[in-house]
Image (tube, rainbow, N blue to C red; front, top):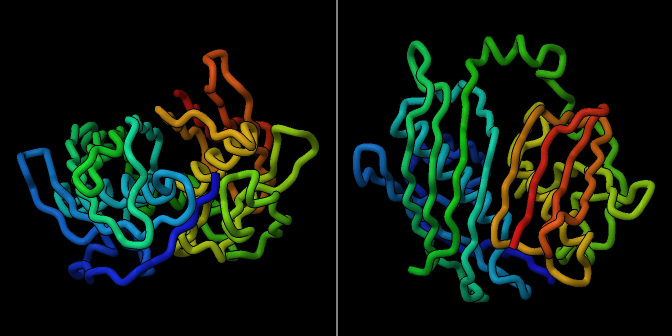
Length: 292
């Protein structure tokens, strides 16, 4: 199974949405507008790039949809300061069977976001739990749940210490595995490199992949780790496709750019289910389960 995306002309988003979504490259901004539907419910409109290949949709775009809509709501409706650092601790998708998205054109998406305010700090929200109902061209594609947290910059500086600032792109990037085995069409899209045995890979962080690395940050983004898990699950099951009825991601610690991160995939007891684990410096950093 291979897929690719091409970026087509799209409506310009209102000023400020890029900052709310933490996107600097306008071509990667999916959200075009938002409105409040109820006290803690919001509707957001998006334009998805055209999908090419034989997968029904692009998982990277779905993950970005959850990230961008959640951040827009947090900053726009709950006054979370743009200077705070975002922490994504958990993300889950339920993916009902749906027909493939149309090829060769952009598609319109609409997302209903419902918010549980979670924990409050002195002046702003520390956490927000959100549920997402994603419709594309009027058909339900996914339901998702996430928990976002925020850390003031001064606290984040103390937390990260010397790792707060990195020399962007200065780390080595090993050669990618065969793109076909991970469901991708180009080597530049591959985030896995060969390791010492089957079922194990090294994470490769190529900052030239602007879909995953929109701008410099001090640790590997959560969506890049989710992409690594997706590719590892596909590699384990190749030439079949892994189960994707439900995806549950749990993030435990930051993944650093300059230390090796091992990505391991293994089948679970449930038929078709796969668990992918990311380990760095001997500690589990994240885990993603794919289930039918």
